[in-house]
Length: 278
Ligand code: C2E
Ligand code: MG
Ligand code: MG
Ligand code: MG
Image 1 (cartoon, protein in one colour):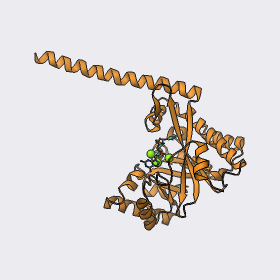
Image 2: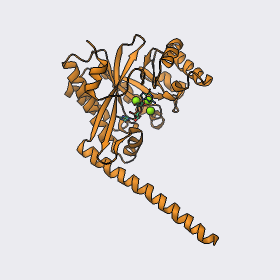
Image 3: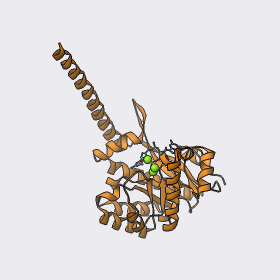
Image 4: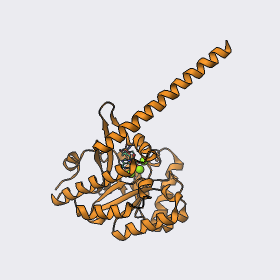
C-alpha cells in the first residue's frame, strides 16, 4: 500500500515536473518568435531630481504575448539570457530607445541634458561586438553619447573584471554614462567601486521600500550615499512610491529618484503627454 501511494506521489511529482518543463519550452518558443517578429515595445519611466525636474527616463521592455498577454521582463529576461536571445533583444532595445531619443530631440521634446537609461544584460555587455555595436548605433541615430546611460549590474564584474573594466573605460571615452543598477543586491566590494568609471548608483528598491520602518535599511541607504559622495558618484533611488519615501530620501541626501510616486513606465506617447511640459 505504502509502495502504491509512494508511486502515486512520484507520478504526481513527475506530472508537475513535466508541466513545468512544458511551460518553459513553450516560453522559449514564444520568445524566439517574439524576437524574430519584434513583438516588443519599450515603455519609459521618468527620472527626476529634488526640484521635481525631469532628468531622464529608463527604457523598460514590454512583451505582449498573443495568448498570455503581458509577460514581465523579470520573468522572460532571465530566460532570454539562458538561451542567448538576450543579445538580439538587447540590440533591439538599444536601437529602439536611441531611435526614440533621436525623434524627441528633433521634435524639441527631449532636453539634451536628459539621459536615456538603457538596461544592459551582463551577457550582452560581455559580447566582443558590444562596443562596436554601441558606436554604430550612436552614429546611425545621431544621438549625442551624453544622452545615453547604460545600466549594468554589480554581478557583471564577477566574471572578468579586467576586461569589463577596459570596456567600461572605452564606453566612458565615447561619452556614454554608466550606472550600476540594483545597487546593494550584488557582490561588488568597495574596493571595486573605487576603480570603476561609474557615474551613478541606483539604490535597489528593496532598500527604499522599507526605509521608513527598517533601521538597517535606513543605515544602508545612509552608507551608500556617504560612500558615493566620497567617490563623487550620483545616487538615484529606485522604487520611490510615496511622498514620505521621497521626503526621507531627500533628507538623507539622495537627490535623484525614480518610482511610481513620480510616474509609472508608460508608452512613448504618454511619456511626452504626462511628463514633458514646455
Ligand atoms: P530594473 O532595471 O531594476 O527596473 C526597475 C523595475 O522596477 C521596473 O520593472 C519598473 O517598472 C519597476 N518600478 C519602477 N518604479 C517602481 C516603484 O515605485 N515600485 C515598484 N514596486 N516597482 C517599480 P520592470 O519594468 O518589470 O522590469 C523588471 C526588470 O527587468 C528590470 O529591473 C530589469 O532588470 C529587467 N529589464 C527590463 N527591461 C529590460 C531591458 O530592456 N533589457 C534588459 N536586459 N533587462 C530589462
Ligand atoms: Mg534598470
Ligand atoms: Mg533596478
Ligand atoms: Mg531590478
